Length: 271
Image 1 (cartoon, rainbow, N blue to C red):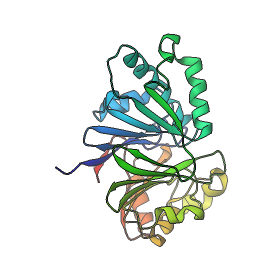
Image 2 (image 1 turned 90 degrees about the vertical axis):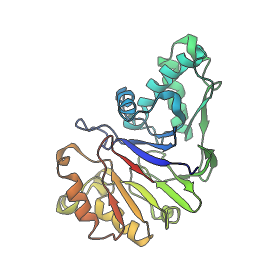
Image 3 (image 1 turned 120 degrees about the horizontal axis):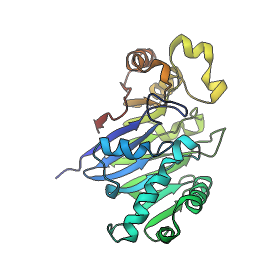
């Protein structure tokens, strides 16, 4: 029986969004889950519940960088799982991947907020593992390669996940994509990328310069150049939620001929 892969978008908002959850998503292979980023608080628990993901189904977590809207949710997951592991309610371990800055931050959060009784589960059942540029792993039984995004604000990594033979899902974080990494997204099936603003508003405000976030135009032009088949745009602001799908899609189509996906929170697509 062929494996079923899907993406559940748990959040689509930028760092200070209040009308939608912070950008994070889950790659699902049948029942098993690979969580990518975790939002900025315990809202991650509600988001997971609403797309019918149990914490016990998460096999691996990747935190792309240590900004609070991407990393703080993971400590709530660790808090609950550490207790379940301690009580022997879960057998399979969970792996949490991140660069050295991310892992050090998680270790500090564990020290501050995880009860002493449960800390013994860290690196016994909850495995914290540092990844570096071009590291290769097996997650959900599939090949993944992590790569340095050469971000300007903090060390940040993306990845290429091969969900089928010669079919890749590529994640490039929430900063402007460096040309160094164009080779990593070339001809990928799906590209998940930051798109902060679109149209004349983006041209006037210039989030690329002010916040190091891509505009719809910027990432769409790269996706077209690198022959990406499906472009997923996320990490948006609150002010245009009601019009986002229409406006982002229209703007992207000016520069990109592939399929444009502008998800809402809790939306799921089948790969």
